[in-house]
Length: 266
Image 1 (cartoon, rainbow, N blue to C red):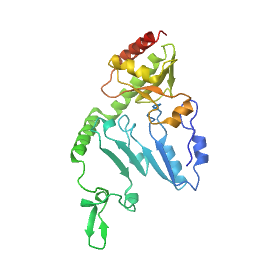
Image 2: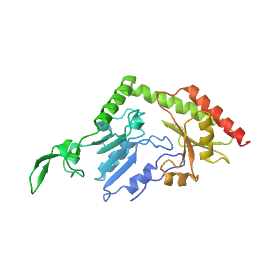
Image 3: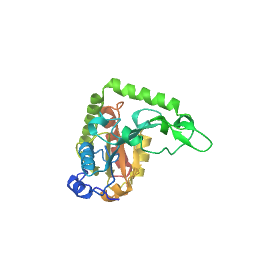
Image 4: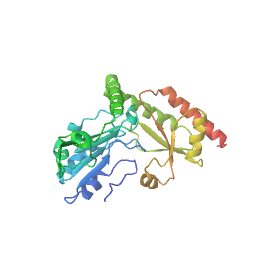
């Protein structure tokens, strides 16, 4: 395995990516938006790089699909996946998109139900895509709930959702930067999340005190220990934004952080 390094501003080093991805590379996998930094990675360019080297291109869309317009044909990715609960849908449901030519050559890994076309005592043949991968009774209620969430966001307008998130993150970074002792992580142009730390205050303490103020944030390594090691911190505090958030919510976050600093007498 090889890893594309980060530049100091939290963006991917594309020059290094060109050198790392060779004719021996089988898969290039990248997240569209960082769940820690909010960085929007140039996935279309990276998918073109993968295909130029004869590799498959896979996109983690868990953070991008809820916040940005995403067109798998335009990105020309081989696979893209995302989870439902980040898209305002129910938990326990998600989506894996794959090009038909790949899905048709893949073997199923779960068995039963409609995934079988014919079966005998000595063998079986698989059904067509997508039924080949849908063993047993599907999560029907989850699918219906996820469909409703997608319809809701589509009705709001995906471009409008993206612009709303961009404005909120921009305002949050602007206001947080005014607080002494705050360190922000990631590029200025991002979406969905803002990660920060407060000098001399452990991130979990910050989260616990903000919780008392009615503010839900996440603290820790955000399932990205290698990235946090690169940043040189044990963890950060992450504020996540969605369509239901407003600039007033950012103001409440700023006031809450100031109260945290008062508790620690900063």
